[in-house]
Length: 296
Image 1 (cartoon, one colour):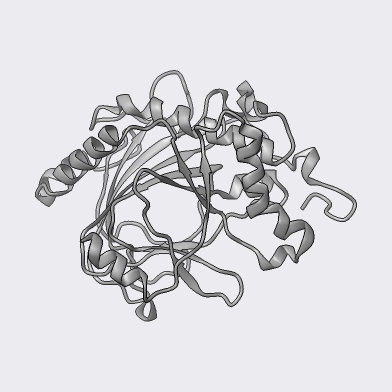
Image 2 (image 1 turned 120 degrees about the vertical axis):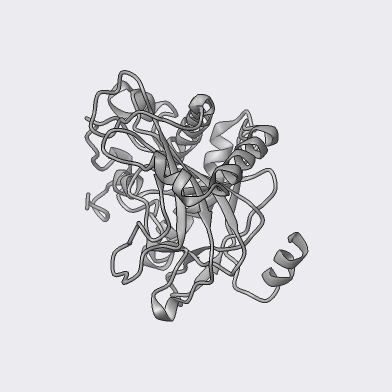
């Protein structure tokens, strides 16, 4: 599988992404790496010419054993007969299963050729977004949430605010986080509107994504408006900037349009979505506005 992936990668457009090492004790240095990837283009070139909201993180503190176990359990669940999976269908009372073709992105005719399972927060977060989990044990949810907040600290420094800027109770004190197990299947055909996951941007703050070695995820370059594959790197997670962080940063960080194409192979991924507290007010950061770049 990996050999085929590498062979395919040599003949297709591949996105070149920044890689941030979270083991670096100097978070300012990690933040500087992000500035080189984003702010250089924003300040010295044309802001509209650069629109990549993805990067890799390494030494993130999430063990390979934990990731492997999560993928193993995910595969076991999706291998169950459909009638068994439908017994835990996601509804207004609890998280759960979402079948193939049930999700349709904007401007799509067909639903996505993917199935998924939602795992959300539980407990004292009394909002309409909090639903009971019925499978599996969400014990690892908190560990991944803490690593996502660590990434948020690097992003804060890159935006020239204190590293703990987003740590306040009204921002990430009680975050609306959820995890999504994903299984893609079938062969995509964009000319017919058939996708593993249709083109979209994520509406939250950011997404932490673990994938297997099967290619499929693409982001769209602004010029010349071409789709490029984002490869899976062993030991690294993919981070995707969401719409809320683009708004917070006044467009310095971009929420990038992306999609998933199926190639006939089974493809699995696990996405963790970090969103601020339910009552958080999202507005342009003071350090991200100026006379030449007023709040949008």
